[in-house]
Length: 332
Image (cartoon, rainbow, N blue to C red; front, side, top):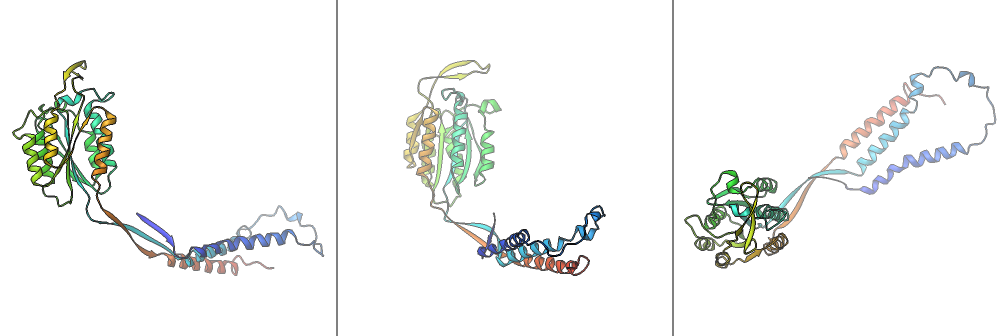
């Protein structure tokens, strides 16, 4: 970001000097005494055409004022600089593992379904971070890398906005929690960040994939990756739209025991979110728990801009002298 400053800002007070002199001159003109000698009437010359010299007679005065302003600004020593941010330390590296199985269409988070509510809260969580690299994995019957850990939150949020329920975009339905965790671990495996975490959000039990949630958690624990698990949805019957848009009731199959085991294995925590407000509170809590100790230094390399004002001011002053004592010279 560009910055601008004056080394000697007090010098700018001299800019008011031309105004002060003009005010004093005007007051003197108003208070002048009546002339002792009266001349003949000059109204007969009022209709005479004014020459360009007459029209520009005030130009030298304006140029003198402009030159004064430029020289004063140069005296104040203006400087410009480009800010550079130096980060000391590293932030947290985070991967969001998001369930996009068909059950995420459930409408117990009215007026949104579970997936749209989760996307909204995740977006708010991302916008609250500053120096943390954040990635996104989605999973249904298979797991998919959407965005690798990045500081480009704009690109991440655009990709998050395009996430849809798996059957709606032609992907096989299912809930492969173990594969989702393994894909998130694969994103973080090569990272040297001091803190690496996965935030797993799902509303069902693991029913797909060759890797179980607890086995995947053991792999993450070996890599020193902590997992926060969020079980989404109310227990019991929940409304869900069918292919024709009609609502039907299905039984919520959230496997809280498996999610608790995953978080315990990786030294994380398990949370249950039954409504949108509760989901927001969970992400706010994780946001507080996983804060980085990054320090920021702002460096500015200042460059003097005074010479431009000084040279331009001298050129304007030279032009004023030439005009005043040349083509625009007046006789007292």
